[in-house]
Length: 299
Ligand code: 8YV
Image (cartoon, rainbow, N blue to C red; front, side, top):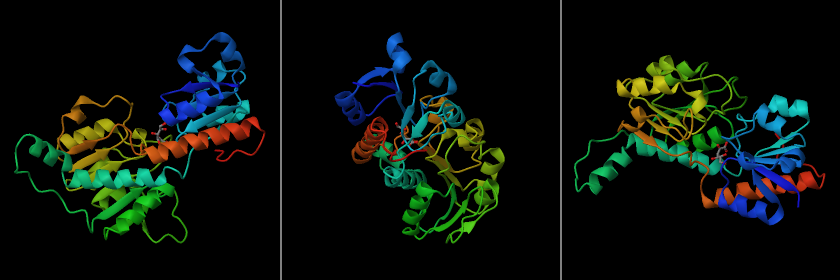
């Protein structure tokens, strides 16, 4: 059995599929002999693999990421070392887009607060804000951003977006900067991949304004989390729906204390259907790598 090293917590489907085919070893409890000879590392979108992890595994030839985001993998170092990297795009797009809509609706309509009211035996709750017809700004119009846009078109929303460059033949209005996008929308949804600079700072949040909502299903690193908490506490934005955070699994207590936020523990791709498909794709990439066949989803 070819040994496989794992980093981060694996879904039960991935764990089961890997253990049926390989001897699996966690990175943090790796016997020396395995460390020296293991050719494959399976990791999550958040745990990734930095240069020190790669260099601790001298025989490493494949990093299979269980996730679409590869911002936590040092891709330059992998290239230098001749290590192939795969991820799991497409299979999770619909679920992540669904989560963006769920966060937008539950934040704007105060669903968690209303739920808590009923559980307390109460009945009166403050009114929320209408999502149908909202002006939506999507920061990062890629596969997932596009799926979010198509869903919200069904809500009669007016969609605009910001990417590094405008997209040819795109039906949505392009804005030149995150601040321009924020100024022209009622809810800004971050679907950008992480790894670059912080895109949403205090100035962008002020451009979103006291009636604006921020939704993030991309990466916590795209937002200045302290500036976000300041803006929420001071009522400089209306609310936030967050699936991702700056240093997961840590969620600041100041954020937890706010009733204008809806928080999820990085669950956007976490449906049984998608997690099974992600596990299958990881296993297929590993099987192809071992058979010297083309990888399904190389990065
Ligand atoms: C996963 C993700 O939750 O796809 C990504 O980039 O962050 C998520 O889908 C994570 O990788 C779980 O393994």
